[in-house]
Length: 171
Image (tube, rainbow, N blue to C red; front, side):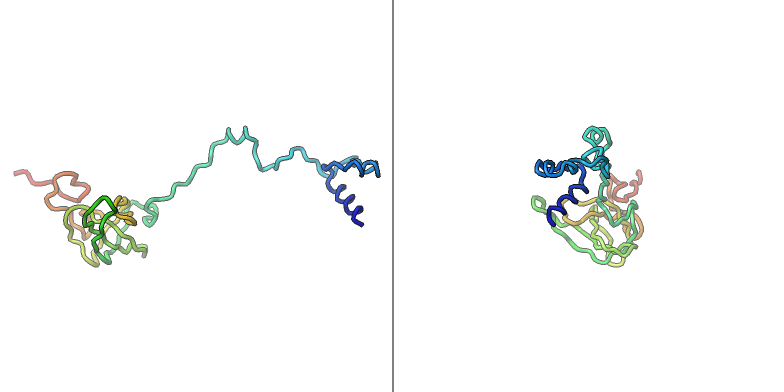
C-alpha cells in the first residue's frame, strides 16, 4: 500500500525526480510525457528579483504625529481642569507651570504654560498648540498666549508674538 501511495505522490509532483530504484523498477514512471503544471521559475510570482527590488522606490514610511490629539489641526480649544507645578528632568531645576486641559474632542492633555506669570485658573477657555517641552516628560502641547481667556505676558519686549504681548507705546 505504501509504495502505491509513494508512486501516486510522485505522479502528483512531476518536478521531483524519481529515485534510481524507482526508475529501474518501472521505466514508465521515469517522467510523465506532459506534466500537469509547468513551473517556469522556482520563486513565487509575487516576489521580485534583486534587480527589480533595487530599481523600485522604497515605500514611504508614514511618520507618526508628535501631537496626535490635535488630530491634524494646528490648534484645539479646551477648558482648563487643573493647574499644577512640575519639576523638570535631571540636569535642570525649576518650577514649570502645567495645565491639564480637556479638549473640545473630550480628550485630556497636559499643556505647558509659557512665559512669566499667568492668569489661568480652572474653567478658563484656552487654545492648545503642538510643541513639546523638552525637560517635562509627557508634556507635548503648549497653551497659546493672548487668545481667549489667556492673557499675554505683561512687559514683554522680545519675541512678543510667541507670548501674546502688544507693542509698547512710544513716549
